[in-house]
Image (cartoon, rainbow, N blue to C red; front, side, top):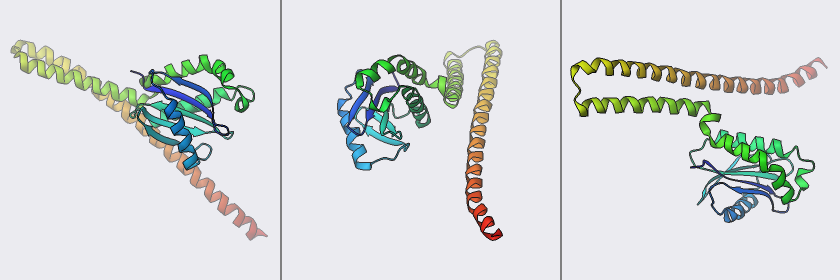
Length: 220
């Protein structure tokens, strides 16, 4: 089952659909019209992230400075950060095309055919692009195996001489669970640290923006 269901690239100025690809054989023509109507209602700013739910799933889209909209349809559980990471890569690749904002649909379709397929394959494998998701999946898998072994021991009524072997297996699995939990904690810790540093830099920039003019005025 695919997680990234469809990709649309739209020139908002004339409502021209420059690129359209559905990966689950769903008709997205109606969704295209819904997105256009939604844009006209909220008039999103450039780089503003927008979420829109339809019968086909969840659309996440944004506009660039040239009023080109990049829209991705995905499952509701797919992380927002990875959707917008894919959108950034699509935008980066498209902007390599000369005068991309004035291009015709056929030209964009031909230009994007290969790298769009590669990006879809990359981001459709969520575990491959999201370390947090991959670590969580590993932890859950170890939990499942441990629970299955416990149930088997209870249901099958193993003899005492087999319990030592099973206990050793559970000890190894418990160690794996601890290691993967520790890995997940480290990932989350560094992600939080990066966020705190970013917030600190923003606060420092604001303070400098306020203090420097005051210091200059005071010296005059």
